[in-house]
Image (cartoon, helix red, strand yellow):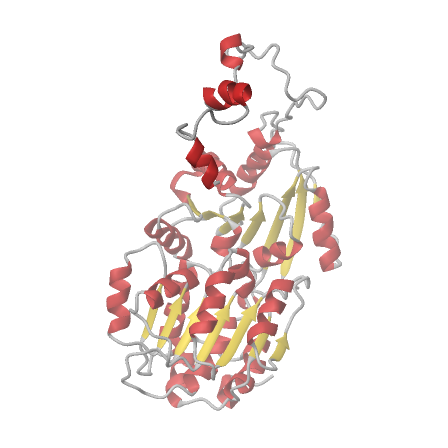
Length: 447
């Protein structure tokens, strides 16, 4: 395997790489370098945590010459605000000894501030599709000078419903440009996007989405319901030395809030949460405090934590079992990054068992099952989603026994609107208007 010293890099990039402590490029970084520099369209498929940001930015920065022009030459699209902040920070660290202007734009904050930032000039713009499209429509940002387009985590972007904005952004870009796309999965939607806008792309596939990472130890627990999962989680997390930095995935925002409230009662300020209903400042603060070690436990939804480069995570908990097996791979890829050892724990109910089996089929690997410790209380409390709903299939319109608010209508209230009295009575009697002067005669003639 080559080292960064063997790549054709400028001294400034070598200095930055040394400062970051990188020695050997990952497979995706090594294979992407020369292909991206060639100017061909590129599609990279690699698991999360393999250094995709560095894979596309290193060759782009290598060939980015100094310029004073206002309009950007490189556009990077990512799905979430947190990823914009992270990618901007990473580019700035790579370009530490270069004169490169990087601007990040995303929704949820005042657009006027971002208009002022792009008006001062930028070489690279990192953006979420929605806010970028708003800036272009308001004429604050022009895309006519874009030479390189990068779409990172494109499968998530399409899942979030950004297809419309992405398609429109493609139409606004110069025809002659290089397209670079990175994704953890190759879905049908991604294939359609490639067929529509890419020209004979060079495909780099490093790891199939279902390949389990060898440096991540996996295990699972069978538990009956939500609150038993909470009890098991609380029991395990009391070992602060072993579980020193824990990321817990919950599929839905309501479930994430419910779990956070339960854990906060036990662990207090050690716990933080991130999902799309939280304010931008709250989300960024949660990520920063977790990354710096101020918070030991982070509860997150799939989309919010996708692509975030959070270091030294000891354990990833799948509090619920994702119904798409690929999402499991993205989740566990948050631990065991940069060839470090990681741990993944899956909690599943009887209802979620088919999802677990789909994950195991994708990986071709049986996740070792652990016994729930005897000290863990088996809760009989059910959340609304777990409670049995009683439906009268054979009599859905039955009103008996529904209480005083339900009764048969009185006779006068059962009347229906039959139109005006003229149509109902006089027209029936005379068959036609009595005279040409009849008030409705001319109206009907016009019809």
